[in-house]
Image: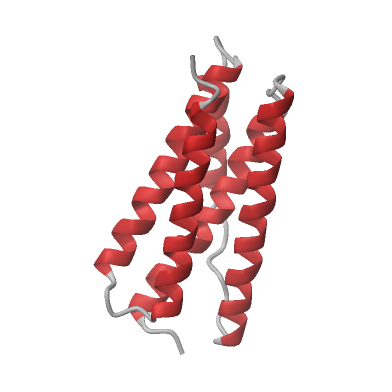
Amino acid sequence: MLSEADRAVLDESFQNTRMAGEAIHMVIGKVEDEDLALDLNRQACRFLQYEEKLQQMYAREHETPPRDHVVDKTMLWGGIQMNTLMDDSTEKLADMMIQGNTKGMTELMKTVKENRTAAREYCEIAKEIADFEEKNIEKLKAYLK
């Protein structure tokens, strides 16, 4: 059975990977730059691998991952549509993805720090995801002018 701290770290990690994957899938149709599209597809694959790994952790504990909230997905979709209404350039899309990765990384690290008693394994995967997001930011900076 998961402790409250374990659940908090696992849930934040899971939601982070789900929202990142969703954001990429919503943005990818607007991407015209082949290199950016390739980078985003690679990121989406990696987020999916993390999601699957987290699902295995939940299953091992006979727990279920948090459900997607329709409101969150709708807000994400609306935000992407609004932010790209006047400008869907490669630079704008990369900037949006940088912001998303930054937010995800920050939320993960805050959750880990607030739940210091969480199992090391759960904190390590959260940190691994945050490190991956940091690398994504560095790659995406190449698309900024």
